[in-house]
Image (cartoon, rainbow, N blue to C red; front, top):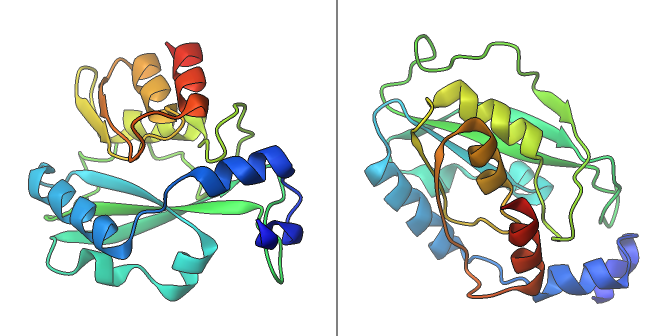
Amino acid sequence: LDKQKYGNEGVNRGMARCALPQMSEDTIKNFINQISRVLKKSGHLFLWIDKFHLCEGVTPWFINTGLNIVDLITWEKHRIGMGYRTRRKSEYLVVLQKQPLRAKDVWKSHDIPDVIAEKVIGIHPHAKPVGLQKRLIESVTNIGDFVLDPAMGSGSVLVACEETHRVFIGCDLLNSNENTQLTLKEAV
């Protein structure tokens, strides 16, 4: 919380963010390896990363997985956040694809911009944009397909799946979290 003085998130949101467990580098690598193992050929992994990991690089997470970075989407959150120097107003979504790399006949929507501005409404401290996730899910899956979110947090992918008629499978590091429970109840 001492670092929160560099942001304007407020005490409640700051405490909620601090209460969330962070995945270790080994956990992230293990998730990515297992996702790569079960992902269909030419399937996609959408991975949210922060500015630190964008600058430091995430390539070591994908070594020997058969996944390649094929795109990057910037989400402008309409909210200023943390930062020692500049204040974060964006998050980044790395788009990975399992080999063989193909866009034709795999990626259906060709009008998704690489910078999306979408305000998130919800009480979870790491809620993600449902509208963007819906567009991405519709772009790479069909009605009735399975979508997995192993770090479901606020349940935004669940909402996107329900609204696009996909089958959602999800879990999170937390067994129970009041914020997540409230958001999921609102979503269902």
